[in-house]
Image 1 (cartoon, helix red, strand yellow):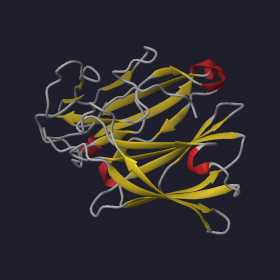
Image 2: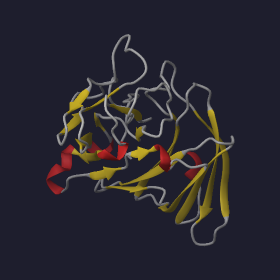
Image 3: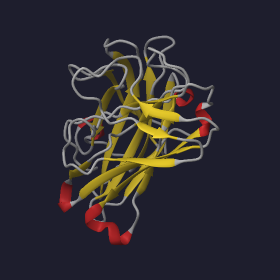
Length: 263
C-alpha cells in the first residue's frame, strides 16, 4: 500500500451539536485527506466530495470543542442542493492527512437526516492519472460498526502489498482491545490469533480521531502465511464496543488499489 506520514484528518456527521464521538450521525473517513509520496515513485492524493441533498444549510467541521491551535480543516458550508470538496494539495500537511483516519461532523440548525448528506471519497496515484481515476474508498457511518467484522478473500502474494486498518470510536483515550484472527480461505483453518490494542497518538482528540491500529504485509501478522488467500476477523473484546476494519491491496507493478470491506 502507499506510504503515509504521521498525519490526520477528522470528520463526523451531526444533526445537533453533541460531545459524543459515537453519535449515529458520525462518519469515519478511514484515511486522511492528503497528498503524499509513496512506493515505486507514486504520488497519492485523496479527495472527499460532499453533497447536501437536504432542504437546509449544513456545515462540515469539528463539533463540541473549540480549536485552540489549528482545526483539521476550515468548515465546509453547503446550502441546500450544493456540493463541495475537501482536498489537501500540500504534501505531508499534518493538519489534514492521516493514515489513522478522521471523524467528520455535519452540523445544522435545522433537523437534517444524516442520509441527506452524501459522500464520495477517492484515492488516486497522480503519477499514473492518465490510466485511471483511482479507487473509491468507503465513508463509514456508525451503524456499519459491529462487535466483529469479517474481510474475505484477501490475497497473500509478493505481487501485492496488503494493509489492514482497524478502527474504534470512543469518547475517551483509553485503548480498545481487539482480537485479530486470520483463516485459510480454502480450508477455514485458523492461522493467526493475536491481541491488538487500538489507540490514538498523544494529543489526538476523541472528537476528531478514531482509535486505530494498522498491520502491513509482508510484515506483521501476514508474515509467513502459507495460504494463497485468507479471511480476516477483527472482534472487540469489551461488551458493547463496536469496531470496523478494511484491507487495501496494492499491485506492486501497476499500483492499482483494491479495497476489501465488511459486507
